[in-house]
Amino acid sequence: MKALIFNSGTGSRMGILTQNRPKCLLEINGETVLHRQLRLLSECGIHDVIITTGKYDSDIRNEAEKIPDIHSEFVFNPEFSSTNYIFSFYLCKEYLNDDIIMMHGDLVFEKSILKKLMKEPTGSYCLVDRSAEKPDKDFKGRVENGILREVSVNIFDENCYAFQPLYHLSEKCILQWVSETEKYIQTGRTNVYAENALNDIADRLNIRTVSYAGCFINEIDNAEDYKKVMENIKTDENLYYGISSLEILLGKYEASRVFLVMGNHLKGSEFEKYIDSLDITVSKFTGVIENPTDESVAEAVKVFKSDEFDVIISAGGGSVIDTAKAVKHFTGNRNIIHIAVPTTAGSGSEATQYSVLCRNNTKYSLSEPELLPDAAILDFSLLEGMNRQQKAVSLLDALCHSIESMMTPGVTSESRKYAEMAIKIIYSNYEAYLNDDLTVNQDILLASYYSGKAISFTRTSVGHAMSYSLTTGYGIRHGQAVALSLIFALKYAEKNGRRDEFSELYGIMEEYEGETLYEKLLNVYERINPEHSYDLSSASEESLGEKVNESKLGNCVYKFDSDTVRCIYSDILKYNL
Image (cartoon, rainbow, N blue to C red; front, side, top):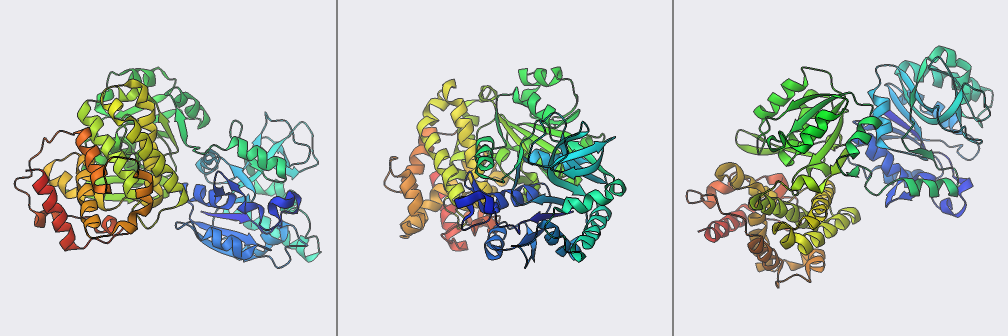
């Protein structure tokens, strides 16, 4: 499947807002409309996109290239100033060799709407809302027996409804439509909507309707529309609070059959009782292990394949959420809705596209935009069952995610924002959290989410690269192994005068106790004081160095070679004597 986005217009009705840029480069919460559309398409498994351009051709190309998972074909409309998008559509004909998600470049929508369109079986679909008031100056769709018959601004009959120009079209359907536009082009009718050509053959296209009621979608035609979009799109669209949000989400996604991946600790809990009380069919998998393996995931996949599900819910720690993501990957069902409910504050997996698994006693990661959960529900009451050691090691994991994110070459303004918020929340609340002060649970849970958001932009780095051999070989809990690795990696880097590489991190952590980053993190580690319930007496720096994740090791502004890695492991072993 491909996507087609129309961006040839000049946005003249927006006044000063588009004086020097197209509408698709207006920003919403620090992200352009185009970047947002491409990101959502990527998260839904669409990576090939056709983008029409005009006056702002180079600006649009530059923006589209910022999404690494998207391959874009650009179609320039040389007559952008005198034609409507019917002409741009016609110019795209040679690229329409697949099913297509088609949209306008100024359309802002929730990811759930894309999921709804793509969930439908083979065929062609459009969006209507029968319950919404008919707009005066925007598209309406005439519908008969669930089939689209006409799209126009000037129709107001009883069988006409609010309509949005976002389509899921079969290859056959879109080729029929684009061929019809040729008649308009040949007769000089290039200043009309592409839907004019659609209306001529709508009775042959069999485009069925999908409701977008309850979901936000809006075109940006003027400054008032832009204001409306800014007011309705949250900074963190996937984030919800309180377990009662689950019923809202299940209704939004029209879910009836749920595959629940659940941590063993939730058996018999209030959470399980709540799930059982819902009017849905639930199949549960509770065989998740810490540091999930290919084999343990295969068991979950077997259960998933035994039935037809429309939603996955994962409730538990990082291993549970990662297992649910792996089920999506290994079944190829990447577009099934995934709602993550973390019950630990550390992994941040509810906010990332990564799933960490073990194969032959070696950790590896799946990384796909489609693996990012569609929604994350934070409910601080779910942290109440954690003991002090669980809190300590998970807290260290969240803190290290944020610090490592700031050490990568891929730092962005967004990743920096999330990393800084997570670091400050953890430093301000970790002592109260470890002393069972329930009033800070929500803050700590949010910090874990933010740390996950940070690494979703940058990936992890040296601490995680070196932690895996400690975890899989000697049973050190993940967060503790990461913290030890990062602490002594920082010690080595700073000892060798590489402070400049971490200047931004110094600025964020300047107020905390300790002269160096190494001292600051070591102080926190020792105050958090995780249990040392492991034995490294048989380990050597050589054997530990053999299982370093080279990809993560290289994802750092300071480069650690194999000799350096052995020195760092040597310091870890001495510290643990």
